[in-house]
Length: 450
Ligand SMILES: [Zn+2]
Image 1 (cartoon, protein in one colour):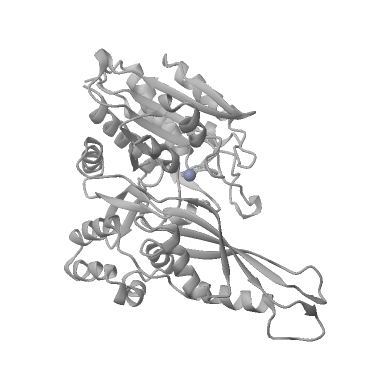
Image 2: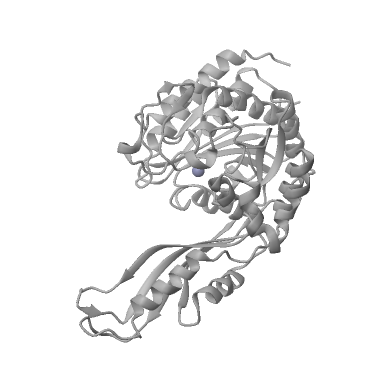
């Protein structure tokens, strides 16, 4: 087996990440072209010839393939990440969000954990496999895509609909997990095997128009506002999914006795509401966990009226709805309607179904992840995880591949992934990133190399 100098490989991956962070790919407008070019150049240096595919001017997707020798034994493994990032509020940052600086043990920048970190790591893994001429039994595909942050149309969706042969695979590793969670004293690496669906709604209430000088009871603004306030205060009914049962059981089994007994009760809808705050004293953790047990419906955009002295005949609100695996748009609409009341008309603006990797545990990828975690962070455990947001898995899993969200990074316990994700001062711990690179390499090598 070829030996790799992991200090040098880590340096190289960190430098690549810094270069990627210095290219502004804020979406909109995206402009992923220069980042894709940079990756292409670094891959070519190790003899890999990538394809660059523009879905629109400046919106570039990169696909590179290392071929299995002698026909191969299994379907390809796809490593995939998006090149675009969400906007920043510069004034809230302690460092330049597009500076790629290293300070206090972190690489800082928009995209440091979402998800130029994984893009740099995956490119590095392909480079190392090519450089050491490691014989492969499965193709290793690397796809760096555009446009995930505004819904994937010019990225993974474009590839799935126009060039599916380039990204079809048996397994995929991408966004949605891999970051560490600390519960009590125990560290866990999340492995995303399911993600919630999206169901964006418009709620509309009609009322009687009138002059602003004379109040009346049938005011659309007032009626909508009280329905919205009810929605904001109410937790939608809890549904236990297979993935959350597996997650809670795996976490509970590795906790001290008291927690081992209490944690499974979070799956009991009758007491979970009361228990959440006690089990997780930190409200951000409790909130994050609660979102994994129910559908959620968050009011985000309000509109009504045009003139201060006119009571409008209609008021509208947009709602960001997220639905659990196993739930459907009609079942979700029923839950929202029950809370908001019969006067509210609900219209679906956009929906994307939840994704669940079928039978995710008994596969070479899941066991390779467990082994890689054990090898590089012996006290930690890999646990299945449900992603509350959406990823490129929404489109890529349509190709029938088994998706694992695993972009490994070890976080210090006091720093929470959820706060940095789309947040100010996004940064990745340099040590945790270097460790993640080795884990990812081991997973890919175990699954794909001889
Ligand atoms: Zn992302």
